[in-house]
Amino acid sequence: MKQWYEILFENYAEKYDNEVFTQGTMGECDFLEREFNFDKSMKILDIGCGTGRHSIELTKRGYNITGIDLSESQLARAREKAKAENLEINFLQGDARNLPFDSEYDGAIMLCEGGFSLMETDEMNFEILKSAAKSLKKGSKFIFTTLNALFPLFHSVKEFMDENNKEKTTYRSNSFDLMTFRDNNITDIEDDDGNMRSLDCNERYYVPSEITWLLRSLGFRSVDIFGSKIGAYSREDKLTTEDFEMLVIAEK
Image (cartoon, rainbow, N blue to C red; front, side, top):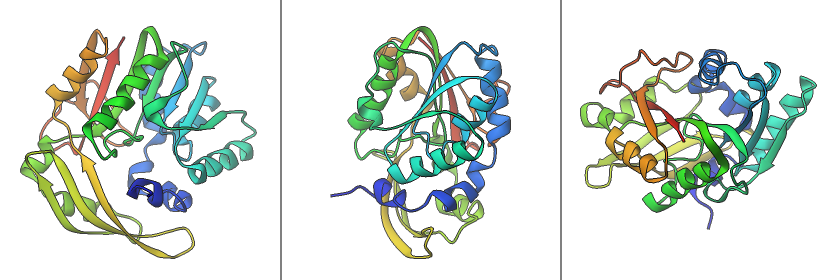
């Protein structure tokens, strides 16, 4: 049986590119370049690359990128966009829980959830982090965003989603479980062909100390966590209860 996130991305590539949360690519890539010291000899892995927005922009700036995603539909859109820009990018279909790499990359990114926190169990989410760690060389950086569990303790996730929704998407039957830090909701979306779909969604929110512990257990020697603002990532942005997402920078 297909999971909700597999069904969501079957025919949602064009709509996805119009979402509010995908509009900060340039600023996010500016930040990534600074974190990677503008070293264009690096091999960078884009985990859960979606329609390829970060892969494409970083390739245009001269970096060697491999994008990997579970959704063939999202990848088709990524390849189409890359071709329109005359860019050669290696886009692969694959599961982030079982990446086919071993100490091959100098850096990895996993932005806009990129698979992590969407999985149905904590163990599966951990497999994504484990797989990313295995793909990286020693001394490399892993930069990703994930859902901040401090936010729903003080705010309504439904209100936030409604305010930041550009497409015809509605969130209902929303509940945040304090025992599991999981948000359950029914999301109604309109796909690229104009068909409405109803999805039973379940996402895991994390507190900073959990992320730090998980990454430390995988051999990352430093873990820094900040607030995550779309298109404006910054090490000056201290994480607060107002941040829907957190930005994680880990060094192996």
